[in-house]
Length: 224
Length: 249
Image (cartoon, rainbow over all chains, first blue to last red; front, side, top):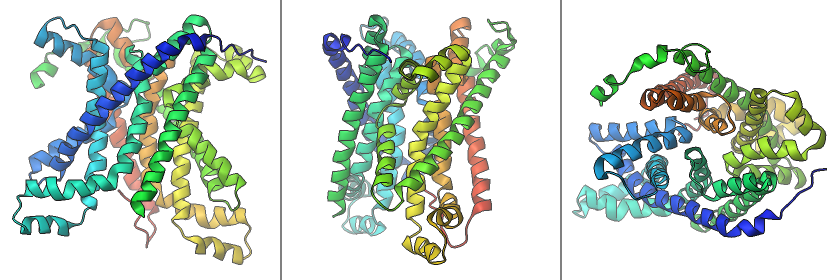
């Protein structure tokens, strides 16, 4: 039988917590930028201008057809070059910045699809009503359609956020240590990789399962 | 953009690879093969597991649907990368006989491949299970009742009545799960499996031609995507059932 040795976890808790903070930072930035940019892309995709809607479709389909691992590698290649061209030698953590940019732009493509479906679920009569009241089409979108759409798609946006929270572990491929990276490094250093990986899995499960229960009860409340 | 791409050194793909296996083009195609092999093998596992779990979730009673639900929750709420590391680093250590066989009986490439297939298969199986369940549930209770009233047993009802229709209804979401498994297979690069994204990193590291490498690999992933979508549209047309919309998004 395998002898488990959990002794290296208590001492590592402060580092693991720092890693979790970083995980939450990446998740938070990606949610905020992703939803803002995603809304713009969704509106562009539904716009009458065929140039705008084609560009938006290209953005969404482009990001959705390549693996997140490749997206992270791409931005870890691009961001440092762009930064050094613009600012010279930067003082920021280039890995973290690359992860922020990669996740924000990547998630925007996923959020855009959710938001587009949300906008389309609002009945056309609402658009006509807004226009009949003398609003411009921009005002109708902003004041009438989007508030209703967002209310309806809140559960989907939150579910996407849970997936995103799990996906941040992939910054491992660019050598950035968030929660999972810290757990892996600790286990590797102390020869307790088995225990640390099980621990990390258990924490992810607890957080994500808890969050998905909250989303489910919210969904029930919205339906009723 | 165009001048940038034209300014890159595309001859790099015709130069010999660092490991002596041939040109870098061949080097990438080897990765392409592993990506396809890994994705397709894992998809077969995911389809079998997902079908079993999805059917369990629609069974009468509490126990079997409960087991199905636990499976889905566990595999959906742990990140793919963590699952892969659990399959690759943890299970061989803590499972006595099988673990030793895995570590000593298989060469490294085969270890990575087996861990990758199990990880992607069981992970995607949970998502397939949800699609199978919703496909079966969309059929309405009357079909099940009619089958039972005709004297079929429960297994026959699933095999002859419910599943043939349910599978056809869920082809579009299954297609997107298949596309996901191809994209997710890139995660196997973290344990060293020489699939497409791993090869592109190695190509970049050894030749410093990062852009050429990433552009080529991104296009290859795009090519797989487009091919799968064309094939699935064909399959959808062939298997279309009159009277069902088919849940196209």
